[in-house]
Length: 197
Image 1 (cartoon, helix red, strand yellow):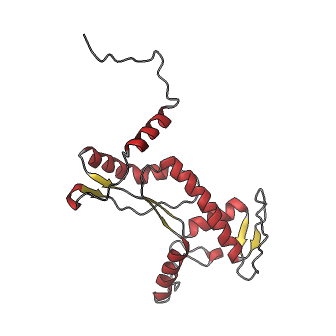
Image 2: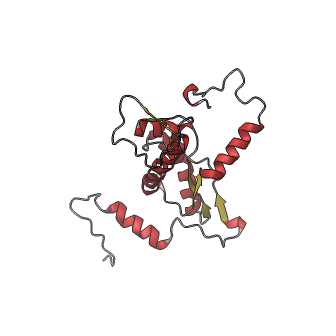
Image 3: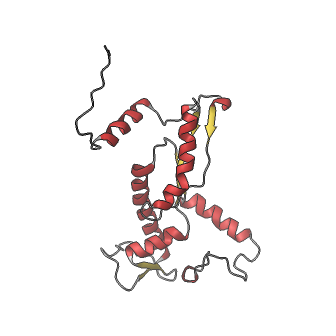
């Protein structure tokens, strides 16, 4: 006679399953990276962070399924897996998302408006706003999008963000050090409205 009978419900359901296992994995530290392991015990995965520029889509699945599979395989083999998740908050996808989401466009000639609030719904014509106001909207929407992404996909304990003032300085220096960075022919992804690539 079996000492540990398996009790299966008549009609299995998925409700509550994700919450149950998320709580268990969090309590057990299943995905927590322990920095006390030796180098030989660690399997590290370094991938470019995805751009936080909207909703999750099948492209995210195509991009991260293979590394997630490798991380899980190495974890099952007993390795301490370092697989930080991060977000790339710089660049054109973020600026485009802000333009479309709020119905605004950046006009560096305009003065900063400390009381500016974006419209509830974007209109047919984009509203011109100052660069500082535009950056504030980029920071606001990016923070909201990161929260959604972290809740949706982030099982990792380590999160890094490629964005903010330090990244902006590094990107600016990189562009400025190049010889004629926007010389002909224009880069493949040049966006004339933003004068950027």
